[in-house]
Image 1 (cartoon, rainbow, N blue to C red):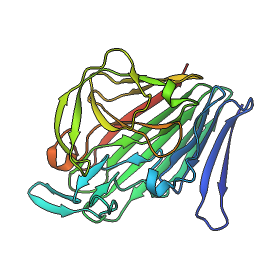
Image 2 (cartoon, one colour; image 1 turned 120 degrees about the horizontal axis):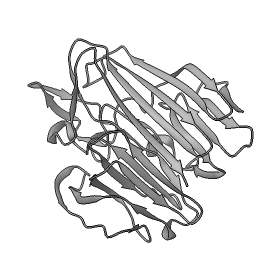
Image 3 (cartoon, rainbow, N blue to C red; image 1 turned 180 degrees about the horizontal axis):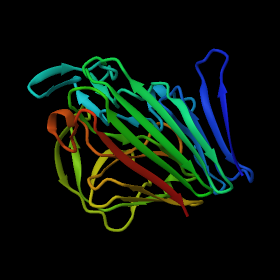
Length: 298
């Protein structure tokens, strides 16, 4: 049987859910006050997402939901429907707006369910105020479903305002390998993006992956245009397949200054999407957008 525990620290700075099955081989820890991000994950007895200390969440954005934009917006500036906007600059060193507006929001637990086979939690955040540079209101609902060997994340966005708004979305999980140099990925891509010195998209170039994308001695902060909705990750102790319900997908890979760890980020857009339009969508008033990501361990 699965169980769900909710814990709030005395200083209210730490508010999280722990989901676990009775055999202790399936576990998830979700920090409600950190954008409902998945900070720990065990599937089929394998610890695949762990705390990244001494790195901080403010620097890693670990497992955050990237909305209304994934990656960067150059100088935080963009134009939509003929009007200029200035987002808050939260990446000072490159003078960019980075990773959206919900990574540090506090979500509420609105529904939970446990059975012998799984646990489901429904989490909600309502944006009722106009953010700097993004004067729109919306609600974002996350549904995490944990089983012995899978984690499923369903994201639903509702435009609750009277004007349409631009958006892309992504997810920023980091995964642990016991030996990253002896690990590899498989994905279908013919193009990789070209970045400038501020990691802003300026072009794309052909990319040829012949079977395995080996991670040995690679220092990555790269984005690939995917031809499918599937990414496979192979380590010495476990492997998994990550899928997306979207048809147009991008893969951002990043190796942080933390041993044997890699960010495998599925996104629907690229850096500076609000200006280059790559993957950009518009959500009309009183309409919904939904995406589903799934990780199944083998």
